[in-house]
Structure formats: C-alpha cells, structure tokens
Length: 257
Length: 141
Image 1 (cartoon, one colour):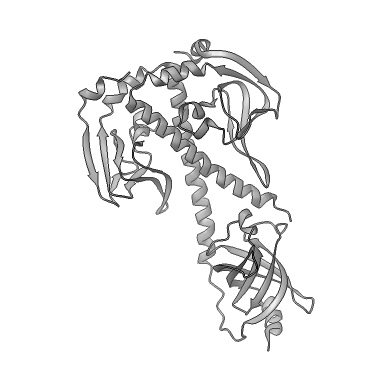
Image 2: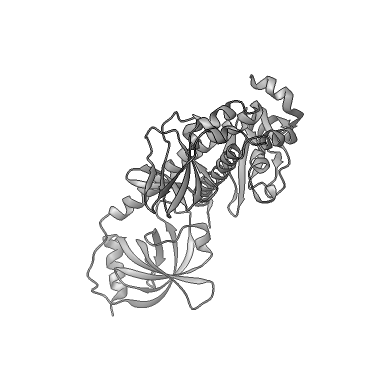
C-alpha cells in the first residue's frame, strides 16, 4: 500500500559536495532527507571536536529526529557530506499525517526507538568527551625531556605494564628489549592489545626490576608499534614521559657503558 | 490511546521471569516483541572479561522490535537480555505489528529502518565503551 501524499508534495533533489555541511546542530529545521547517492556523517560537536554518531549511505534517511519531534524542531546533530552526495529533500507534511495516524502500537514502538536513539547518542557524546579529555590531559603534560646522554642499551628485562589511570592490580606482562633514559622498546604478546587499546599516543606505566634488584616505575607512551620477529608478539616503541629522580639515577647507572 | 488499551489489542501472552533468568540469549533468533509490564531487564554482552551490562530497560520499554522491523541479518540478537529482579513481560503480537509496518508508505518504512539501523550502531558504540571500561576494572592478571 503506498501513500498518495507522496505525490502531492514536491520532492526537491539537491546536490552537495564532499565536505559540505547539510544540517547544523542547534538550527531550526524540519526537512527530511533521503540519500540517493553518496555518504553523509552525522555528528555532534563537543568542545570543538566532532563526535561521529553515524555514517549513512544511499537509501538511508536523516533529519527524522526533528520530524519525530522528540527534540523539538531543533536539529539534534549536524550532518556533513563525506562524499559528493545527491539528496532528496522531503517536506515533513509528506509524512506527518501518516505518522500521526500510524497504528498506535507501532507508533509507540517507533517513538521508543527514537527516544532510545537520542539517549544513546547523548551517552556516546559524554563517553567520547571523557575519553578525549583523558587523552589530551596526558598529551598536555610536559614531555620529559632529556638529552640522550646514555646510549640505547639492548637489554632483556621482564616487566609489567598497565594503561595510565588504571589500578596497579592491572599487570600486563612484557619484556623490555632495549632502553635509554628517554625511550624503550617493549616486547609484548599481541593478545594484550585485545584487552586494552595500544595505539599511538596511548600512555602506560611500566614497572621493572633492574639486575641489581631495584625496581623502577616509569610512564611512557607509544610512538611506534611493529611486529616482532617472534610470531604473536609486538614491539612497542615508547617514549618516556615521566621518570622520578630516583628512578632516573637508578636507570642512568644501569645504562652506563 | 492509552497504552493499556493498546496492549489489550496486541498482547498475545504474558511471561514472568525470576531475577537473572535469560529472556533472550545472544545469537539466538529473536522471534517475539516484548513490552515490560513490571520490573526491569538488563541488556548484557558476553565478553572475555565476563558479562557486562550495557543498558537497563524499565517498565514500558520494548525489546525484540529491532530484529522484527530492522534489516538485521537473520534477526539474531546481538545481546543477552536478562531479568533484573522479578519481571513480568507482555508478548506482543508480532505478526500484527509486522502487518502494521508493511501497511506504511515506503518513505515511512525507510525512515523506521534507518532509525533502527542508527540505534543498532549507537548501541554498539556505547557497548564498546562499557566493555572497554569493564575490562579495565576487571583485569587482574
């Protein structure tokens, strides 16, 4: 059964170039868009950062949240063309009568879905912002700068490491393969990366015991990640970001030629 | 129309579950659409760090509808839904719901499918955050 209303309201086709902003969050707007060609990204801005909520392609609809009227007639998110796109613009009147007269149980179900979508999207923005704050606060910290007075030494030290911010109870095993006062090469089993993010810039706290029996702790972040010659193992190239004065002298002594 | 009146038209059965009992198992076909009449349910996911709760559903919440109306491959549930305390559920007449859905114009139908797809995507994103946070808390090597 098709609805005759579709023919009554003119459908406009618009073209957007890659990068064009189609909908701006917070603006007033009631049109509904159907993607004919291309892709768009739905995102919210939080502290100058775009948080992508969804990527849609041909056949998908957007702009419907304002139409469903759960967020009022204010756009709840921005939409940008990420490929050259052709869109059909629908006037909401084309659907609003049918929507209102929809079988009530189905309408209840759809309203529940859209309310949950809004709630989940709010959560995503919150969680992403938190994660982002954690990352930037780590980056902002003055990197521990030291001239490399000691050469990088090939070593084989068992160690434990954990993502910064986690309880010391978290102990991922690893081996330090080479080390200087400003960086280290850490060999780990690849499966560690399944439990915790191991990406460029991720910071970890590394604990090890030097051959003289003294333990040291340092903080370092990942600069490179390469496969080890041993299958199933990875080498993290890390740059030291924090080292206490005590640990520094212990390590300095150990690294002396 | 009042939700209770509505329910009489669509309610095909009622089920009760004890706390912790699984209502929909992950990976199984979700054949029914449920509405929570009393109590609450938790949406959980099995991970290598154990079971984590990604969402809670309260009275009036619907579940199982995404598999029915969305274009989810084979309509299999991506989550475990379990009773969180004793719960009373209404089983909705999914054939009637499907009929209602099929009577809609293609435009409105594609709006609904996109909505479900987006919710599915957002659920996955939130679940990934919750699972990651839980791994961090639970990992005790």
